[in-house]
Amino acid sequence: MSISRAKSERLFAEALKHIPGGVNSPVRAFRAVGGQPFFVTRARGARVFDIDENQYIDYVGTWGPAILGHAHPKIIRAVQQAAEQGTSFGIPNPLEVQMAKLICSAVPSVEKVRMCNSGTEATMSAIRLARGFTRRNKIVKFEGCYHGHADSLLVKAGSGALTFGHPDSAGVPEAFTQHTIVLPFNDADAVRQAFAANPRDIAAVILEAVPGNAGLYLPKPGYLESLRQITLENGALLIFDEVMTGFRLAWGGAQQRFGITPDLSCFGKIIGGGLPVGAFGGRTEVMDCLAPLGPVYQAGTLSGNPVAMAAGIAALEEIKSGDAYEKLEKLGAALETGLAEAAKMARVPVQFNRCGSMFCAYFTGEPVHNLADALKSDRARFAKFFHGMLAGGIYLAPSQFEAGFISLAHSPEEIDATVTAAAKALAVL
View 1 (spheres, one colour):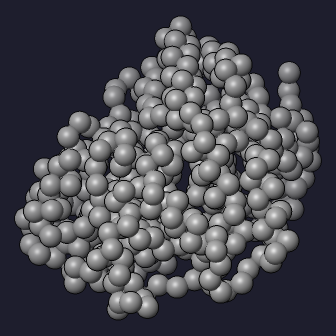
View 2 (cartoon, helix red, strand yellow):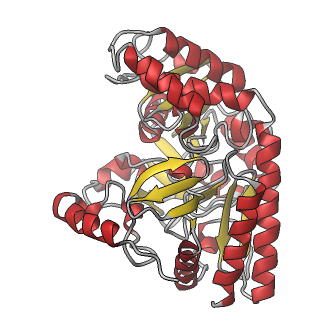
C-alpha cells in the first residue's frame, strides 16, 4: 500500500526556493538514499507524525537527544516554567550552576565545565583549550570521527604520519588544516608513529570513543587504553567527544563504559533535552586556562541559556531516577537479535554493530572496525532497505553512515514491529 506524502512534496518544493537544498542540515535532504524528505509537525514517545498525518517509529531521535522519547512531559513542563521567567538573560542564572554540578557529579574526569551552544562549539573550544594549555599546535583526529563543522576539523586524511590533512569542504583554506593529522581508527601503531614523527608538537588526540558519524563501530579491546597511554607518555591531552555518547552509553558516558579517563570531554544533545546546547569540561588545571581566569578565550551570548538548562536538567534527572540503561540495553539486544535473524533468513549479508542504545546495519559480509571497512557497505542496497523500512512505518537515518538511536519510549512491541518491517524489506533485496 502506497503512502501519500503530497503535502510534504509541495512544502519541499517551497523549501527549495528559500533554503539551500531545501534543508537546514545536509543529511536531511535524502541525497544519500534518493527521494524527498517528509516534514514532521509533531512527535510523541517513539513516533513522529508528518504533515500528511503518516506516522513512523523513529530511530533518529533528533540525532541522539531524545533518549526519553519525544515530548516527554517533564521536559515540556520544565521548558514552559523556565520560559515564563524569561528566555535569555545574558547574566548568570542558577540553572547553569545546577547543570554544571550534574555533569561534574556524573563524569568524574570533569572537575569543571563550561556551557556553550552546540557540539561543534564544544569540540572547537576544547581543541583551542588543549592548544593553549600545552602550547602546542597539532591535533590528531581519526577517519570517520566527526567533531562538528569547525574549519580545522573538516579534514580528510593525508598520506601518513608525516603529512597533514587536507580540507574536506570548499571554503576551508589549506592553512587551516595544516596542523590536523588524520589517522585510521582502531590503529594504535599509527598514533605512535604520528607522535614519533611530530615530537613535542601534538597538543591533543580527539576522538569519538564509539564513532557514530560513519554508521557505528566500536573500539577494539585495548585501543582506548593505548591512546590514554600514548598521550600521557607524550604530554598531550586526550579529548573524548561525547556529544553523542554522553549520558547515552552510561550515566558517565563512554568513558565510564570503557573505563578510560580523558583530560577533556565534550557534550551536547542529551544535556539539552532537545534544545540547542553544548559543553566541554575536564580537570581544573586545564579548565582554569579559560578566560576570565586564563589566556584562552571562549564566550557565547546564549551559553547557559535558562530554557535549555531547564530542559537538560529535567532530562538528566529523569534518566538518573530509574533503571534507564538496563532498559535501553534490553531493547537494543532485542533489536539486534531480531535484525540479525531477519538478515539471516533473507540471506542478505549484514553486519549489525551496536553499543547500548546506538546501532548501525552495514550491508557487507565483513566486520566493520573503521571507516575503510564501513565504506565497503553496499550503499545502493542500504537505500532500498531504507525506503522499504519507510514504507513499513519505520524511520531510520537517511544515510548508511549514521547511527540509529533507541529511546526509553520504544516499547517491546515497537521493536517487534521494526523487526517485522525489516524482514519484509530485506526479503526483497
